[in-house]
Image 1 (spheres, helix red, strand yellow):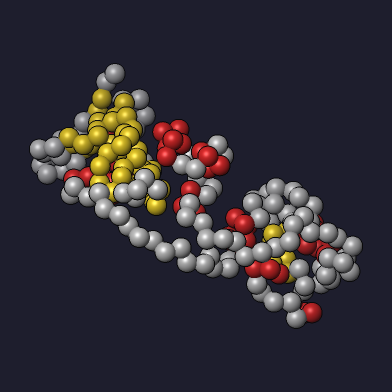
Image 2 (image 1 turned 180 degrees about the vertical axis):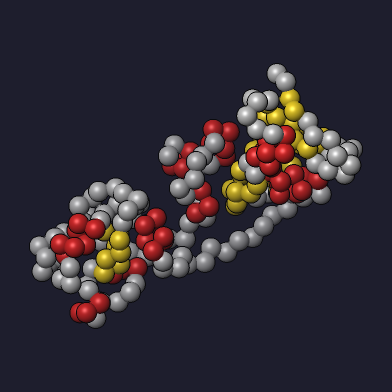
Length: 201
């Protein structure tokens, strides 16, 4: 398989398959932007980095390579495999702070599903179960994802007044150590390092 190379004093270059559609510089940027799963010293996933950042950590001896993508990155004196999974050489302690209430977090908690009709959609709105005009609070327990149709039907009423029923009672979500993997494509080589529920999603 042919490979393209771009030489330059002190400049990094990527060796990638030559498909005739991208210039060497475009190919190099694409490879360096590849996602890399970062594991803590205890093998717990803690971040998704770019290949560029992962290679820097490897070069400084701050991480070890566990799995690699196809391709290499070359400097004048060194050749690096493009990583897909790295493990830090030290333990990072990360306290799990409570999740902040936001539109995105509500949608993630409710799995992009209308809490009245059960329709899954990327086009959702927020609904206050007890309406603001009835002094409903803006809290995890009173805000849900709703499709436009259900939100319009419910209007300024409570579910009981509108004769509608919630799919589930809204609650504050538990801190999630794997938030960085939500709504992200999971690469096949990452799956052995992820909890079962995530690796099969």
